[in-house]
Amino acid sequence: MCTGNLYRSPLAEYLLRQRLFEARHVIHLSSAGTGAIPGTPLAAAVASFLRERGADPSGTVSRRLTAEMVERSDLVLGAATEHREAAVRLAPVRTLTRAFTFREFARLVEAEDAAGLVDPAARFAALVQGAAARRGAVRAHAGGDDVDDPFGAHPQQVQECLVRIEEVVERIAAAVRVG
Image (cartoon, rainbow, N blue to C red; front, side, top):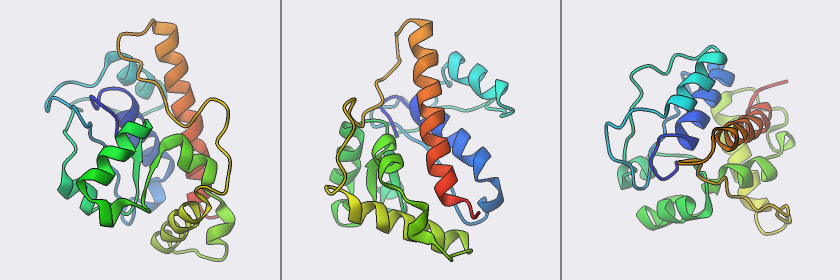
């Protein structure tokens, strides 16, 4: 999730869906924004970035994050700490150990937590549990765990943000995939 559901979270959703295609029947992905105006079209820069990578984002529009979405999620990833905190406020009991920023989860997830597990759902649950257990024990990197909002930024900065998200998605997808 992010703020407007126009850049960061829809990009992460599409890229993860693409990289975890084999597990699509078990791992369901969606994105939303904490301040989204429902029905707003995806940012053109994100749509172009996704098309270059073989995805078809046509018709993608923003959605607002709801408590029901958070309650139904086994993992909640926010672009920034403020998004993680918003999810926890919506469903504190369910989300406290399941909510991370994109970069935080990528930093904490270890494929070894799911060693020997082939079932995608079991692997996924083990990875989330392992990352939650590691929280606080692993030092954050100097740049922090937030992905800055590229809304209104110079096109080069937008592109850098999108590439950064793609790198984070690769790390997460690599841990989830078997082998």
